[in-house]
Image (cartoon, rainbow, N blue to C red; front, side, top):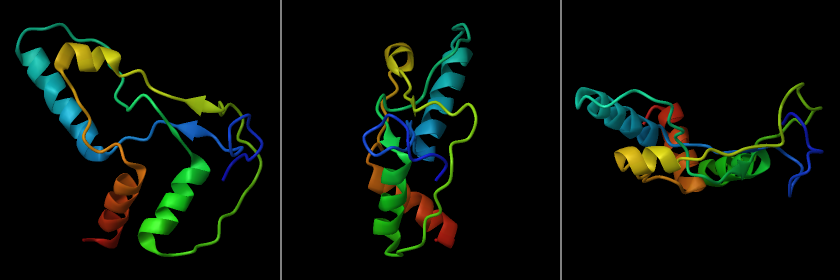
Length: 117
């Protein structure tokens, strides 16, 4: 974990992680949006809330049932304490609704993919 002294609840960075299936669905909607003659634009895909790096690590440990060691080190230059998306534009413009915003479900899906299931 790069940085454990951020001004966040557990000291680690907070990020708005997204399930790959939700991101893929957003891409399909964007293609349909363009095919319908609508203009291109910038759209944030995320859930509008974040999880800390430590929460992600604990989630992966839970779903994998593996208590792996975690190495903590200093901050990386330029890493902000939190990055949270604002998905309001894609929701309003394309009616995008994410389906997989539970962090354990996201971690389990990633773990299953890594295992080759």
